[in-house]
Length: 547
Image (tube, rainbow, N blue to C red):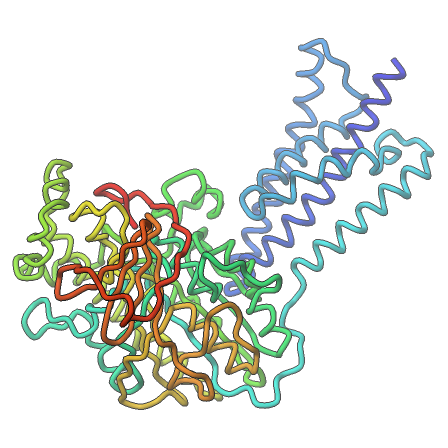
């Protein structure tokens, strides 16, 4: 009997430690995730979460002793342990929705934590040890979620920086006229003409997630990231940092160290009110809980509107509207339908994916391209609002619009059956910079990698570049331009791009050069060396492997 009571004593201590640690972490995570842009909504979320936790705990306090007796198992006297079990279950559930990982260690701390509080014993040494564990955990939580904007402002901060990252914004979309004189992106064309446009820009990899993470982290996937994130360094230098996007950028944004990470998928703002937003995204279709691009821009504009002017700010907006299958909102859903034949000819000539799509009952490739044009136009319509909010900042703003990778259709892998060999259409993207001190009305062909965007921000904050990234010429002075930029495909093939050539090395070592639409054997002696880089995992798309 004494052994049973001792075991119950220790398990009760474990549960109490888990409740204290889990509840503290859950509250901190809630504040850190959601208290960035709309305090009223987020306080409501916190109250609902705590209220639901109380209901679960009270129910467990009543039900668990009865269940234990029904199963013939011993249960400590009183309902405190049942209450603790219910509260622990709720905090673990909330923790899994917010910050999974920490909760795997919380029960271990409980074996030395607070058993005397539960059993009303005088185990003072164990109580002191338990309080010590909880104090260490509280310090760790406080450090994870400390306010990141208390650094002294820099001496010469310059204008704010806004980076609009658009998944799938391929290089040839800027200036495209899919319906006669109707441009797919007229606003971006106008803004680009007032700044600088780069014509040889490539993502370091052709996979969707790898290319997206490279833009945010500022390092290619084959390079180990620095121990300290660049956004955390900027915060220490006096900058305010924020990222607004969907749940797919949440973890990488936190690793980089952004002070505000707003990836709210829509709880109390469009998603079903019966489920917490982040939990809904993990248990249901993530598209149902995702904010539209316009709602995301509105949330970012509210954050910009209340920023104090004494410190510079850098913010990222991540838009996914162009990712296949695009689903533009009216009027863009039908704006380019009459041009499907013209816009689809070049792609339909490749043939393979259109046959796969027809067998699967999917729309024709021309219709898919028309939807892509419509999604491009819907994103384009938001750019004036972004520029209006950014340009009203007292210190001004410089805006980067960059694609995370090239085509969202994966021409090479899907239609030509190349099995993941990287192609310029997969990785070449739009990059234009305008506003504040950006060059006016110029076009540059120097090779650029998308990781150079972060290197440029670091240079503006007087921080040295990391990895093989380098600041963008024409935007930051004093750094030599690249001779070539590289991208790696899912099969390990490596593409080297410069202003006048595209050279590809296969995993077997053969080198070919793109001439028109044909790859021909290249004279390697006359070309820059193409490195051997590790392959990246392919991702599944609607027509098979998507690179």
